[in-house]
Length: 340
Image (cartoon, rainbow, N blue to C red):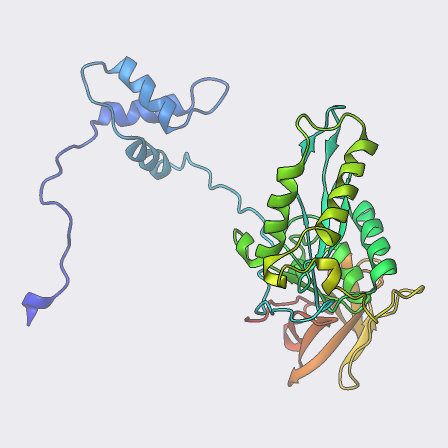
């Protein structure tokens, strides 16, 4: 019956209609001055110009400007690709390391310090607590290399989505995560805004924060000495309830996977074709050129056929997307992101 049809919910009578003179003033005020005023500033100017009238709301002013094509859409902020696989627990040492930067702070000497912490997930053993001058790749890699040489390699490393662990490049890859994968380590990333997914690491950070001197140590070396003392106490003196009041040092054993002196090339199963990306990040499969990204230049990329003329493009355990030979234009084909 027609009585059940969906009907408009608009008011029959609008309680407030913006006068034409006010609309024209809104558009005029948008273009006055060297800077472009927003709805809030325009609303204030209308109160000065029309003191006897209630000014339109900021939302109404915005809608009038938008209808007049005077609002530029905000550029979309590049985001890190969502990690496609569920996070897995670790029952034994070296199955999973976690890593994070414990928020930068200004030392007493006026120098910024970025403490990098690396922890074994199962045993809570703190592998590194290192003062860093920045979060760049090279400095971070040096600390991880020292940890790998001393304790061996884990199966996985869990981090957040910040630099240098991830980037806005394809699949969220970064120089650091590419290096990890070359070493046979699978990078895991928590969801944005979900530090609880790395809760053990966050809890350790709270303990570390409670020990930081106030004010911060003046000398950089003094700051690192404090971190070294904390690491010793946390690993070998402080019992942990979840470990039956044992210390992390009682529960951790180093990995049997040793750090290699030569970085291995990426290898793939026999049914996956492999191609070396050139200096521009392009692979060439029989004249079909695929751009995989500058980060992957000189890396070995896999192509796995999944259909007639359709391939998954792979780097290590990560599927970058898929390509279809029928989409090629002038010999080039773009990677399309695969559904997760």
